[in-house]
Structure formats: C-alpha cells, structure tokens
Amino acid sequence: MSDAVFRDLAVAAARPYRRCGRYAWHFAKGKLSGDPVFRHLLTHPLLPSRGRLLDLGCGQGVLTALLRTAAERHGAGGWPADWPVPPAALATRGVELSPRRVRIAQAALGADAVVQGDIRDADLPACDAIVILDVLLYLSRSEQAAMLARCADALAPGGLLLLREADADGGLPFQVTRWTEQVACAARGRWRQPLTYRAAAEWSALLADFGFDTEALPMSQGTPFANTLFIGRRSNASVQICPSGREFPNASISPEMKPQTTARPAQRS
Image 1 (spheres, rainbow, N blue to C red):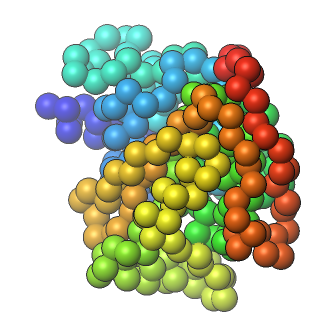
Image 2: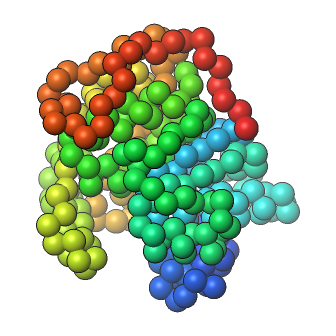
C-alpha cells in the first residue's frame, strides 16, 4: 500500500515539470520514484515542521516539489497513518550552479524556489535544515571542509544537516558509483571533472570536527550504488571550528576560525 502511495506521490510531484519539456518531466519523475533518499525523508521524522530549509546543489528542485505535494496530499486526507506528518510550514530555498536547471526549477516551481549560484560562496542565511545530496564529490577536499564549516555556522544548535555521499570503502558498489558518475560527467561534456570521495568513516569524523552529532545510514536501496546518508545535528555544545590544517591546504574559501556560541536560538521563518 505505502509503495503505491509513494509512487503516486512522486508522479504528482513531477507533474509541474511537464511544462518544461519531456526530459525535465521524466527526469523528475524517475529521480523521485527511483532514488531511495526521497522516500526516506517522507517516511521518517527527520525534517523540521517549520522554519527554513536550504537545498544546496538542488538541480531541478525536486525535493521542494515533493515536499509541496506531500503537504497538499496530507491536507486533503488519505495520508498513510504510519508516516510522519510532512512539513507544511517549512520554507525551502534551493541553490543550483547550472543556469539551465535553475530555469527549469523556476518554470516548474516559481521564481523564488531556486536561485542560481555556486554553493561555495553563495549566501547561507540562518536556517533550521540544510540538505546536500550527491554534491560535495565535485569539490576538492579543502572545499568540502570549508563548505561544512559554512553549514555549521548557518545552522542553529540542534539544526539538521542531511548529507549524502558515496562511501569510498564501499567495495564494488563504490566502483560502480564512481564509474557511473564519470560517465555522467562525460555525457555533460565535463570529461576532466575531478571527483573527490571519502570513506563513510572519514565523513563522519569530519562532521564531528564541525560540531555535528551524526548518524550514518546506507542509502542505496534498490540501486547498485554505495551511497551513505549522514544525518547530522548541530551540537548544543560550544564548538571551535578549527579542523586540522590538512583539510584546508590552498582552500579557495577560508572558514572563519572562531568559536560558535551556544546561545543562538533556532531561526524560524
């Protein structure tokens, strides 16, 4: 029953993309229905019910489309009793580098849904949750660390970071993941795109350096990949954001090396 409900929900969430052309529509429908992370976010009580969510490297903005459709379906009744109530007062904002994807997202979801920008230097306002799915692999090690430092600074204590990346210790599934990504980059004309992977244990340790209490979950169900979802909560303890120098050699973005206070209240919008 719940499988059929989610498939129907994914189809409905992809419907606004029909006006953007067949490719955008089929991509949204396939991504939402085939990627296990989206079902996980709806069937587990992870996302805050209100406040502000930043979706960094959001592509066409399909997470926003899914959350909007889920809130509408819940309001209309018929929501599965064993699923948590979807967030109805959570303002989402996507940041995407590709102008073409931004145009698609804005045409499907509205001009304010996604803004064009590079997540490495885009403004990150105070927020309650940040989602980064399969994006940091395109950054260097120092840029990855700097990006996580900026996320920690934007999130209030108790704020949520959802990060998914491939596990470099994932054996054959990781090799499949890396090969698939290399093919995808080549198809986009980016033959020399560098890809930076870390083992899941290393990601967890890095997140801990930035003050996140983290749970790591396999997130490749139904696919041949080696992806891990890291569920990080900003610690309420005072954290000195000053990781080891090996994370920041020649960094293009320098994190602020200052202690984080514990008195900042959660930002609500």
